Each structure stands twice: as C-alpha cells, then as structure tokens.
Image 1 (cartoon, one colour):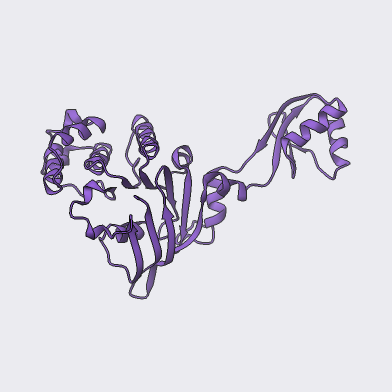
Image 2 (cartoon, helix red, strand yellow; image 1 turned 45 degrees about the horizontal axis):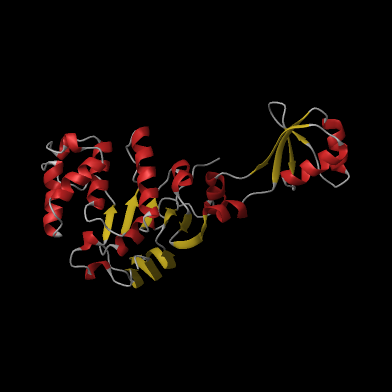
Length: 303
C-alpha cells in the first residue's frame, strides 16, 4: 500500500508546538488537499514525513515505513517542497541526472520527465536562468523521476501561468486516477476546488477537518435557493404560509433561506407560479475554509 499514515505526530521547537498530536491518513486513488493558514503546521508535517526533521513524538510513515528506511526513495515518493532548492549552476538535465544516478533510475527517464514537464527545450540551460515557473516545472519533473506511488506537492502551481496551472491540475488528477497517493498543499482555493477529492485541514498544528470536499462544503453551507419569477408577490405569499421569506437579490433575482430548490419548484408548480430560474446555492470552498479557520490563523488583517 502507498497510503500515508500520520499517528499522534508532534513537533516542538522550544516552547512552540508546530504540530500537535496529529493523526490522519492519505489514501491512494484520490487527490488530498492539505490546507491551513500560515503557521498551521503543513510544511512541518511534510518535512517530518520526508525525514527532514525529527518528530518530538508520534510517527509519519508511507506504506508502514519511515521515509528514511527507503534505500532508493525516489522510486517510492516524489516531493516538491521548494522549487528554489536546485543548484543554480547546474543545467536542468544535469540536476535530474544526478538525482537519477543516486536512486538507480534509468537515465532515459530524465528526458521523459523533462518532456512531460514541458521544459525539454531548456534542459541544457543553467537553472539560475530559469523563471520561477520553469523552476516549478523542474521540481515537478524531479518528483516524477522515479515513477513513484506517492506524491507530495507543496504549492505546485506557484509561479505558473494559466496554461501551467491547467497542466498541473490535469497531471495530479491523472496520477490519482492511476491509483497513486497524491497530497497537495495550496493556498489557492480555486485550484484546490478544481482538482481535490478529499481535504485535510490544519489550524495551529491541530487537525480541524478530514473529510471529502463535498461534505466539507455541505457542512458549512446554509440551505439557500436563488430564483427568478414573474410573480414574486404570489410566491412570497405562498412561502410565507410555510414561514419562509422571499428576499430580493441583485439582477432581478430572489433568494429563500432554509429550503431546497426542489421543494420550491414543487410549491410553484402546485400554485401555477412561473419560475424562470431555480437553483440551490452552496458555499464556495473558500467561504467554507475561512469559516472553519477564522479562529486559527496566526496572522489576520484587522477589519
């Protein structure tokens, strides 16, 4: 199994507890979004998982093994934590060749992942001449080099143009569809909503949520219907009999809280009230996330 298992993981730096008795699983076959405000413990958790820091207590394992137990780790786990970490004096190709040699990966894989990442034409250039987006693509190429079953990607779309963002979105969904385990940390809610199936949310080192995207949003959404009608007076009177209020909204629309579109449709049909638009409204991922983490942000602007 390629699942990631975090069990009562704790990391303290002096008197600061960056990760606080954290437990969750990241399963194969789906994209798991790793969310939380700055200082929530996401990067620390990833570093502990990759053996870059030592936990104060608890465990972080991949398929039941610690990362440091893998003799050729890139065959098992691919990670992008810092796109700026590659040596600027090396060419992109030589950077990947060094990683391949250290992990006994066939050298042909270097050109394959350079092509896959869309930077084959720049493979001979020194990395210090790369733009942020090109370095990001190189970091993703390095993560893919060993054809691993587990991918850890921290802000993978950082510095990418719209075409690059779409490429990353399709890449990670494709990797999950192949049965791989994909954990993606991001602050971009729109991108997270577009490609993630499951969410793990941290706040001040603690687990705030571990649930599907659908359930996460539904739990933080108030039932609301958006509609357009040519007879709001009669609809208002019909709804009032059930204790519901028709509220005027912009652009000739109306909203009703505490009911589903299907129920309003049935009421309108029974009364013969014309409906030109009828839809349930749900909170966006961003709204649901901010609602959950509002009291857990280390830094927040005054309102």
